[in-house]
Length: 368
Ligand code: HEM
Image (tube, rainbow, N blue to C red; front, side, top):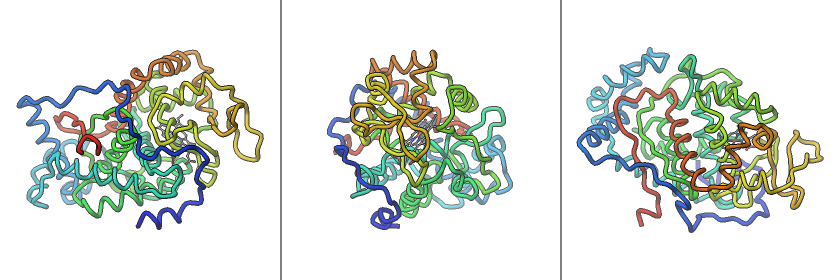
């Protein structure tokens, strides 16, 4: 599907907010994560991860009966060899960098769509693909990419993500060897990094599953709920309160759409630039309940152009959440560091990686 066709798919209007399409400042206040080791261990680990990428394709042939990530662990290790035989192609880090670059280009080629970038919706796809993880049963997560199938694609929480999946399908046609889970999570990495956020360590190894692997409805957070719900949902994935607060900072990016979630508007004045503005605005502005026919949401008293969901506002109300949200409002570098760690972990929940270390993908600017 072409970008222009995708644009026609959405009825959202461009906001009056000033668009910063490609931020000129990249990596602002970033504390970079440790770079991949150059030791032999690192080399072998990298090769292992590359083999896993190829294994994703072979998994279809090799382990079609497997329902659970646990089983997939051993299947993938065997499939690393089967991949070479089946497709005679083992992708390298350079191949994944090419995929990253293609995603980054598509992201910016958004024309009149929203605020001029597909970055936020691609980030939301990566999050919703990963945030279904249930620690207790080791099910869900980005492995298997089950949002490709109904009914998971039709879960209310996933409304609007067909736009992002359509964009990713374009990339998949160009790089058919990559698994959907690897592609979608790499999309999240590209979105954060290209919009000026921190480096997100990432590695391949996810495999494509089947409709029967799809997760039940209700695993993603409900924006109308309170602090207890937010804690419960993130704890189910294995996250602490601090990590939950750091992850919610992604709402510096993008906006709510009437025809998707029912909510309306952006959280910040720069919805295509990764900043800690979400937290500063939460504390610096006065938030009042919006009087309208839509679902309960807050608006800033001053401009009435920004919004907060009930679940965003609880970060200022719950004592534990508030402590971390205040810290991120005061220290952008701290937020960048903690977001990077929590988001990298989110993308790997339930993924049966063999021994391999994550990579740091280079931004388009770094490759100039
Ligand atoms: C309590 C937790 C959360 C709730 C209740 C929540 C809810 C929502 C809702 C209702 C929307 C609007 C969707 C639309 O109408 O298009 C949205 C958008 C978004 N969410 Fe969240 N979210 C949560 C956490 C997160 C996390 C952890 C991330 C990423 C790490 C994230 C990333 C995004 C992004 C980037 C958008 C904008 C999408 C766009 O512009 O198309 N959210 N979220």
